[in-house]
Image (cartoon, rainbow, N blue to C red):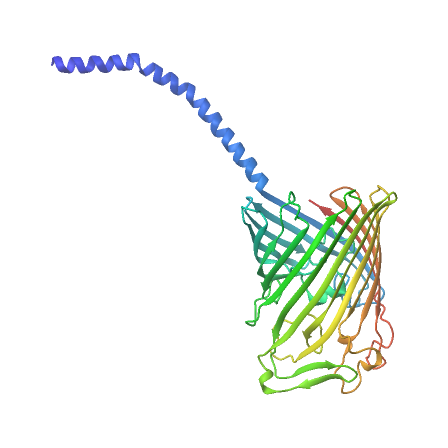
Length: 426
């Protein structure tokens, strides 16, 4: 009995002496814990906001063309019975998460035609030099300048006919390795990229075992007085296309296409090879910045009788191999320190350098309208209201090669196009 009384006494004394301190300590600690938790949560949310970004832009435009239902590279062919239109040219939304070493990107394009995937890739950079990176997924082909130059930044409404033909959609499925030292390095001016791709475009599944190699090496430097910036790069494409039939047509100078129908041709790889060089010079003058930019490509392109565009799976189409070349040149002039810029662009695309004029369309030559050369002179005006809003007025003057043997091409086509565009970037 006495033992129980002692236990009860000491228990009571414990609560009297220590419990109030414990309770008061808990009361004091609780607000501190809550504040610490809130600060931590705020820091975490801020860090996430720095790492996660949503950007995009919308391009709405009005267009007019010289003839009803004309074929055009100024944003696509016009519908039948139509020579003018309102178009939502691009509606891009891009989400990117960057934790320093790795970056994940996904981008969609939403227009009146529907929703389409544009980019979906991961980029990982090694943490030691921060110079070597691996990119894998759907992303821009590593060839030349115009492919990777964003449509929100480009001074003309569309890429040149050359690039739209041999690099439709700009993207492809693949993986590439890049090398460029950080901006703090004296070697930052040098950039090297090389990778392998399906060769079918960004959203098409591969249809053969051949993978295409694309690589480039270039420099980008600024003079000591920072008044001139110049860049030079060379690019190389080596790939192929699985020939679906045994009929292979090679363009022979002066006689059109010569056919090779050896049985073993079916299933072989038709060579797809390009070499390109691009340059850019920016100079600061009292009357404003002047930019001269250009790119030239030549090579061998496999296609069909109907098109010289990069091939897709077609089990019934014979293969036509053509030697081609093409180029574009920009002259850009800012008007002093104002928000206005004048644009002059000239480009050409010759899909078959071994055929010209009235030789195209001759009986037995197998040469068609797909072998005709095009040149385009573009004149434009750009008004950048601020970092978000941009207005563009641009006129494409297109000249097509003519041939007395090709129906519809005995004289230059009426396909000059006017584009009036407003862009909002966020």
